[in-house]
Length: 224
Figure 1 (cartoon, rainbow, N blue to C red):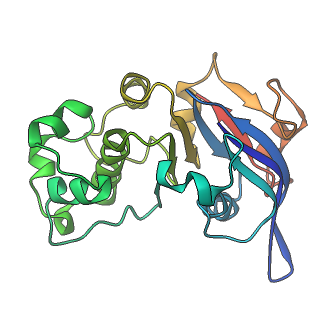
Figure 2: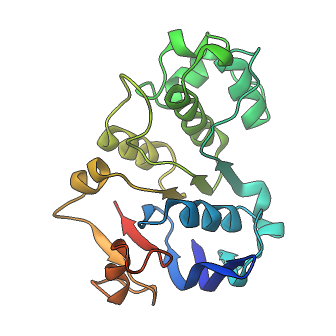
């Protein structure tokens, strides 16, 4: 579980994220959405420990410094070592030796062997993001953070439903946080999505209005 308590971010005198509180529970996949994509990425960096903020961010009641070994964070550019293959990059990201068979068994829909064998510099950004999703699942981390949407995984990528199923199958107790849900992802969740308003409680709270340009810096948490 990740808790944000009155988290706000100001940069050079400008408010990027208004005070925001919510809870991302274990075993859930949640997207932070809003009209100010830059502010969302700044909030992501705060959760990952790379941006100053006011308020408090807790990982099952712990500060990031204590929980960091259990956190896997991937930024939007999905950086990899360019000369190494997908397999080699994945092993480095996870921090331990894994056979190709073990890697392939994690989530076959995310990355085919043909992608994993290619040098990273030949991969598109969507394919690199898929490798990071695969590495996150293989890592066994409890908190999986991604500064991109499940609809931004490149050509021939698995569907949002398939990726969510992989999370539930491989890391059923992980807290998964995504940033910047696209219209496709929003549509795929329609009918069963739940908005988590600024109070952190479920329901259609006042924070739902922040999807409009009039409230660009208070995010909405969309549980998929």
